[in-house]
Length: 157
Length: 428
Image 1: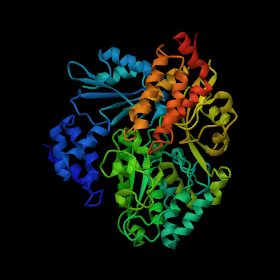
Image 2 (image 1 turned 180 degrees about the vertical axis):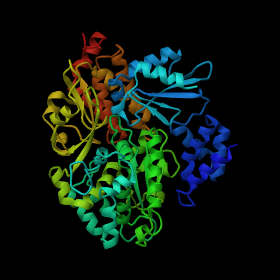
Image 3 (image 1 turned 45 degrees about the vertical axis):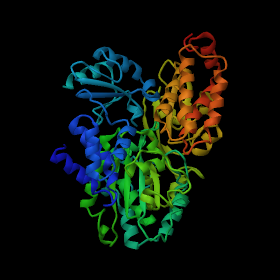
Image 4 (image 1 turned 120 degrees about the horizontal axis):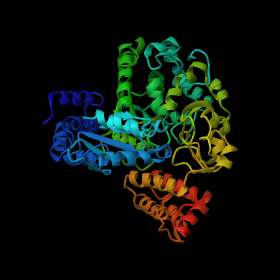
């Protein structure tokens, strides 16, 4: 189900923990699986659980608890905008409005062409640089303005 | 600036250098000297803990607990594995200092964790890094590799015969994992739900082994303290509030950012460093220690110095040092609505008073903000708050109540106007 490269990454994560504590690698393994497959299906979660020798339900608990895991398909580009208070004070509401207007979708929606999904996020720990967003969970873009958002969206293929 | 000469910049001094994050910059300026000395002289753990106690270093993650005292709780003669854990799960709205330590001075954190590991007799250490800062997770892993190659981590560190390694564990979006026992559950590959205490992590921590958990800035301060002595660190700040501290300022200032200044510095000076309040506006309110800290009025805040004791006397807490500045354009009902949503969203759901109570708080503030408030709502908010506080396993419930109680206390008129006139007083 996962590529040799993804499995090698998971194996590397396993080296961080005591041999009898393989479950410790489940968060990383789910992340690695999501990066390869785009989202976490039930089959994927079960595969990861089996690979780590843990009950599927325990892996499913983790996948449903942490909010950066996607349990349903998302667009090729997931844009998560922080709207928490410090970002709000620095103009996140305006960016939210701009993003929704430009893409014609609301939060938790995906454009018809499958190119973009919009999400509302909680504090990302970079408040002084707000407003800011995450692209596909791993790349942060800060000091957002309507103009910089337009440029970013163009670059996301 | 360097670690060689004492300076008020304890953690972010590397920013004065061309390549702040590199091992070369760190070692050329006194980095890893404290560790080398400890290993060469086989400094007794008790002596290191005594030095940290002298420094009056207090936890930089929010609770302000004395670090030396926390370290002394670890059982010295425990036969099995022990762990040291760094808490970089920085998700308290307003806080963004630990990210900068990893970006700009990762090796000082590594050295601090190694010294902690040596002192506490740990076999390994984990740094739990906030899910939303993946690039910093990767950059810290690269710094660890640099340290391994240089013989600073792994087997037989610097020829001392002592083995110790560090690893990064990446979170994936759960504020609650900043709570130390939820963080341990998360490293164990479980839902991040806080544990009952006692037992405390010093006796039953990661994998059930004795564990000490400290904040990133706390651990990164250790090399400075061991290099210049606890007394020098204490003298940077003021009694019972040793050292400098990084303050993260966000909101309505001209220059949001991190400012590392001695504890005890007047708030007015910090505000000036951050470029002051946006032009054309006046200061209205400040949340001085991250979103969980009670809000203070401009007047109360301007009378404070930035240290644990002064902010506590004013009725709030220094917390993580995250200063959220609000000017006269802010509707306090709307601001509280967003914060209340955050706690509702992030409650782990384990304890009923928090799981249900945070939802009630949010829905009531939401209806006040949207012109559907009822006259009895303000007292109802306070009543719900009292039923959450003290009735939950961890402090998230109380963290949700702090903003509600303080916003209503200091800005009650705004809430009443919203309820009565179904619109906002600000700009009315």
